[in-house]
Image 1 (tube, rainbow, N blue to C red):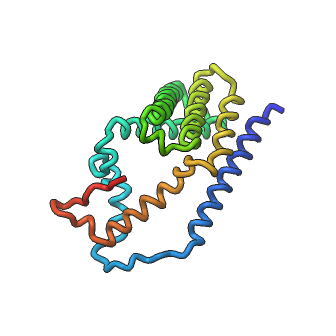
Image 2 (spheres, rainbow, N blue to C red):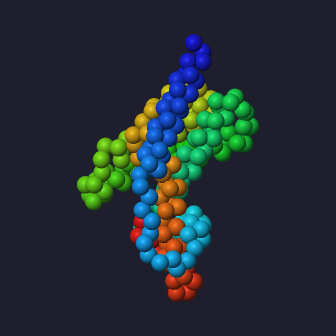
Image 3 (cartoon, rainbow, N blue to C red):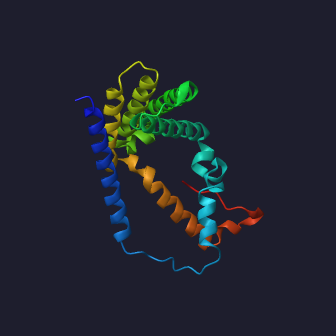
Length: 214
């Protein structure tokens, strides 16, 4: 069947979305614990801060102390977004044109290299290696494979089926891996921002909040 790789991919996407939906349902099914501290600011401004200024590296202690790792992460995630766009264009048979295809392929290659670098750095650093699980290596490896297949597909080196196969494996693995942080990241940042705004931490001296520790 000519459309079998696409069918498998769509089923895999459905599995991934269902898995994420279950996690979100479980999250919201838990009792909500209100912050008992007196309000000293705005929750909404805190959330806005968390998704804007609070994302800057000098506002995050972990990022400011590890700038190379922060930059690698940026390129890794840009590559992932490029891969997702390339996948959507392929699924809907949309031609992005020569320029867009070239840009996407370059971003995916860079993202794949950043993912491979993450694996190497984690294995080489004793502290990281000591706290790592198998998923910490499998997730970036599958993403790097997905990006490589996407870049090769755009360059017309491999057939679409290989790109869809890599995407299908990643989708099937997503609900049970750290990759699902692509969804829970927004809940986490929103919660941190609301807490900072509620407790008035944005009103620190010199008009800015202190650095986050993570």
